[in-house]
Length: 113
Image 1 (cartoon, rainbow, N blue to C red):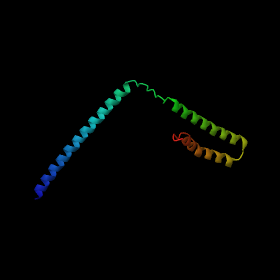
Image 2: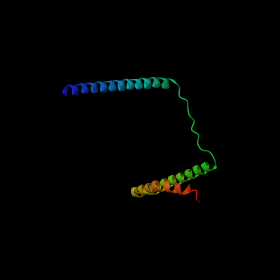
Image 3: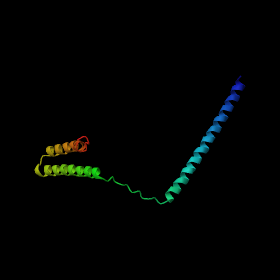
Image 4: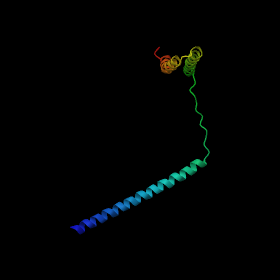
């Protein structure tokens, strides 16, 4: 019985070694292919891709609203910094501005109204 177990174990180890060798060959093939591809891709000059901005009346309106909101927020910050010397007030206005600007932009872009 132990000879049969030893023979089965030897066969199993031989199959496992063959499978490991096959996986190693496949990994070597994949890495060689990847390195060849890297060399080819790096040799080809890259084409600049133009990213088109959306155009149209709605996009212009959205951009104008965004610019106006950010300008008002910046003006509020400048006024706070020039008028007040209180760091507590400056920090409060900055925090509230950072919290309310996205809300205002969301309300302005609501299409239901």
